Length: 141
Image: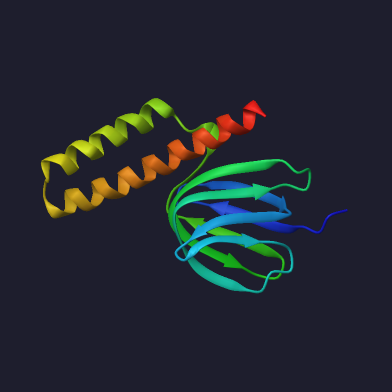
């Protein structure tokens, strides 16, 4: 039996995932992090990007997050995400609409707060679309 670590992925709204994993890959500020069982304790900030959880069965679960914190303890890895969604739960039409709205605000160069918010929404939409593409690619195999 493969060694596992408990993984919890939570956002401000809800718990997204809770279960055993053999590997958790997340996008840290300095690049991708791979967390395996018996990893050294760690706390780091996460950039908007992906979190991929490898289950003991070998199945990969793909999540899109809007940034957050990763905490590694001896028996558990916790992702405290600003926003998080499973790839299969992403509403592509809504994401594309949000992306277009963010691009419109950026093109019109609204107020500084509007621009910062639009940039964040654009990043989150891009991350979600990338998660959808990875999901579709994995389903083809």
